[in-house]
Length: 174
Image 1 (cartoon, rainbow, N blue to C red):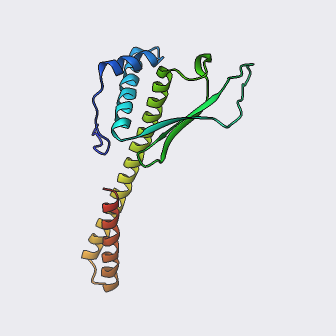
Image 2 (spheres, one colour):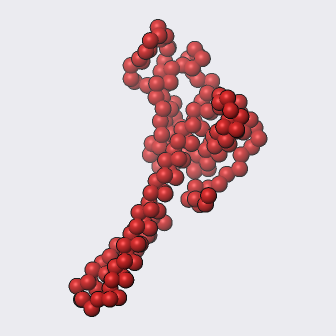
Image 3 (cartoon, rainbow, N blue to C red):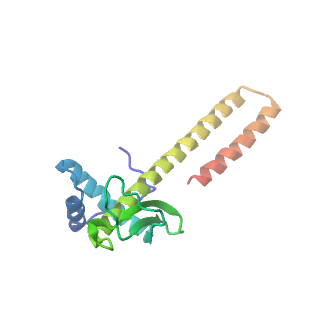
């Protein structure tokens, strides 16, 4: 599979891999290992891209479902890029482990999971834009091929207009 160069490739430490491997909670060792690598890479990549997380009180009322459990506080975690745009969030986090504040392990795992989600979304968006660009270029090539068989002046004008549009799209998606 060809790697997308829009998102930097990162190296992870053994300690990060071990942490996420232990926290993964999956029974299958292969999936735990893959998940640990993904989470460790997401954590490092988010840091390199200047992303930040904030933990906030969740204003929504707590729905206990079928239990009598009532948490002391309910939190949300928000991941933002370096421009302050929200990339991912998770709400309704009820004092895990019965403590008032999430412990550092839970915080780190949650933040890495949000980074992995945001990076997956970013890769999907990049892929979508590249497909749109390819479609526009294909349409332009079809127009040029048709132009080569035409002497119509109006068509030449359309060709020039479409060419400008394709070039603008190409610059915008770089």
